[in-house]
Length: 111
Image (cartoon, rainbow, N blue to C red):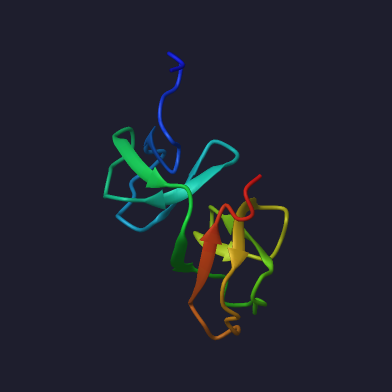
């Protein structure tokens, strides 16, 4: 067995970049994105899941198509259609502009 293997990588421990509650989307650095598995304050250890289907906040000025790529706008704390933000995965449902949340398959397809 390799001695440098750390873990499978579906759930990782990171330092919370800011205060988060369980279920929040967390962006670490410029590209590591996942969902918080418990609450943590800034600087605390935080476990986050890097895959799976999550109900998350969305930009209420945008409608999404199922299967479309989605991006995380960390400032607005919502999914967005613009590639100017951090790639987060694909839409599982097709919410209209009135919807405040959407279902996203995080980090899919695997990069």
